[in-house]
Length: 328
Image 1 (cartoon, rainbow, N blue to C red):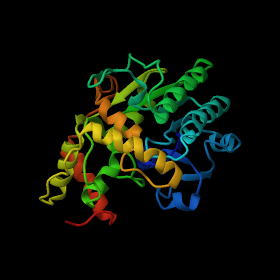
Image 2 (cartoon, helix red, strand yellow):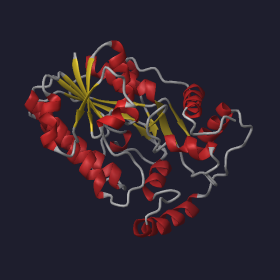
Image 3 (cartoon, rainbow, N blue to C red):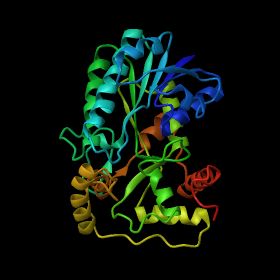
């Protein structure tokens, strides 16, 4: 089967492309830099130069394609220009899905996020409770808008299945969001940890759900994916335990202190150009402290959560192999 993967040099898209190529699918990847991408993808993946923000580059990439895994996007991170979230996440999704509709693609599996749902602080996130109010961060609002745009195109005839992961971690060509905590903790770059908590998902299980969604997901349905819920301190402790360092996690800073730090550092970071210790959006997400209910993905798509210590150990081993963290 001919398949196109967007975001194939990112965390989720790269894992999907590797899995598809290994099982024998004819895989095409939309990439901005084929030379760089060739180092990150199997040799049997066809590389097509293009960009989801440039719609003219998409028709040739989609020619003859039956399924699309749209995993490209700007993840939650610090950006001086927050307009990029909308440009990549919303507008890029419109471009890909419209081009897929025009090309007669049979199905698109769209990588969304748990952030588009509503839940009280510390509450449970389920697929039936989309948040209709604007979310507090530019990233979250861009993903909300992307899903709304995707639904418009789906109503015009494109088959779209949504996968809504929690915070994804694991071996990857990039290390942003929750993956960056591994580097910060193991390289002693985290003087303190934020409070709150987050639902997390190891990348292999997230990949399993994407492939299952392509085969037996229901058009228009959303599937939340998470292994467990964990505090930053507990996650850091699992990292240090897997690494065998014998160290304890950094202390957890109080919320009021990080609110003040984020509020002061964000405007300075935009003006001067440094990356703040914690961005307001990241802190907001952690303090939301939402717990993902992944029972629908387990029931309908056969999702099996990865135990935290197992996923963390695999990630630490990968980072050591890449020379990104100390051997001990």
